[in-house]
Image 1 (cartoon, rainbow, N blue to C red):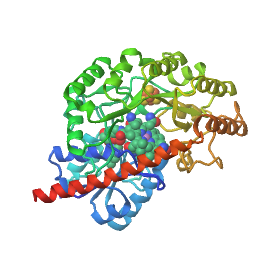
Image 2 (cartoon, rainbow, N blue to C red; image 1 turned 180 degrees about the vertical axis):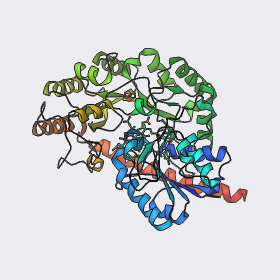
Image 3 (cartoon, helix red, strand yellow; image 1 turned 135 degrees about the horizontal axis):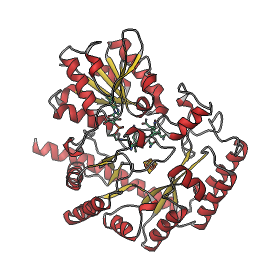
Length: 462
Ligand code: B12
Ligand code: SF4
């Protein structure tokens, strides 16, 4: 029986949180289809765990920024164990013609059925140059070392057929869930719509509520984070999920977080989020400039939509937050100033939850247009991308910036640093510091009690 190990490539300097679900879906699907048993498939947290498991097949999930970690892990495993190495996730799906040498096969897009087919072939010792030609949704190197990209695989029609993803058994405060795949919008900086091939598929409300109930019962988290690109775009389903959660009492046991889009938000939606015990509303603000917003997120959204959400949250006393982005090609100084005006106008009413530096990633419209302008190539040094202005590792040295002709880097840096100073790093008061300390202490005590309580209950039943 083949032993399979799955690993999610990561930055070495920060924990991968929340736990990614992609590998969890693959593991659960192979078990559901009786291709492997639970023990034959491991989701590893680091290279040591991978090597100790001695897998016949190593599957790695990677986004572009961490592709070097994926390559490193695959190479070590290949050299030390001779495993078959497979790469899946956003990076290879955006650049299938650039399958790195460290990998035998790349899986493009949705992975469950494709991975299952590869493992079946491997298991029956029929994975060879001839059979691989017939596997849809992959890229691979043929015997002449040419990269071949096979025909696309059909997407799964009904997401409800998928099992719940495998999750780590330890206590985690926050548990992620996926209720849909894809997004109905086409933002120019986002890879989601090309990755999911412009299809927006939703799980049924029944299936979603069943998984949430299971998570709450089994893991007792404080928070469930809905990881979808946009889970509330289908209003009827949104309403039904909230009604069902409320009726079952789950909304009194656990809080929720997740993204929304401002043009879809009115009074009814805010009230539904409140009923659902949403901890705060979060939307992709990106900018305070109407012209830039329309250019990158589409004509159907405007700054008035952002404003309406802020005002409604204020009126209904629910915390409001948005993520912003800067450095998009075409952004002018005026656009940055409008962002500052928007933030000033809403000071105290909105919290900046994520301040991102524009990164070009394969599979996006902006990636293609920068390529046309010869500003980037497919062999781009992805590891050099700095994504988040607020992360400890962010540094202005050697940043990759693509908007020099509209806003020179020196000026851009000054404006961004000013925004950070004025709207993000406000010096906490003594009361706030004390409150933060007390909260951390309580959380730590709760974690210790939880662990011991679990131990005691397991011991008793034994
Ligand atoms: C949750 C999430 C996170 C989580 C978990 C990360 C993770 N790797 O899953 C956190 C918060 C940690 C995170 C961080 C980052 N993220 Co993120 N994240 C997402 C988000 C919202 C959902 C991912 C997800 O769980 N999808 C659902 C599952 C079912 O899909 P999946 O993981 O893609 O897996 C399926 C297929 O891809 C395939 N597959 C995947 N892996 C493998 C492996 C094998 C062997 C096979 C066969 C198949 C296969 O099969 C799976 C099942 O169908 C996506 C947007 C989105 N909606 O997908 C962005 C997204 C993936 N993130 C992105 C980015 C840029 C990042 C960061 C680099 C940002 C940063 N802070 O620097 C980091 C990188 C950290 C890291 N090491 O992964 C980009 C990637 C763009 C790109 N082309 O590379 C996305 C697409 C956002 C976007 N819209 O642009 N992210
Ligand atoms: S940024 Fe959000 S709304 Fe825009 S396409 Fe991506 S997931 Fe959809």
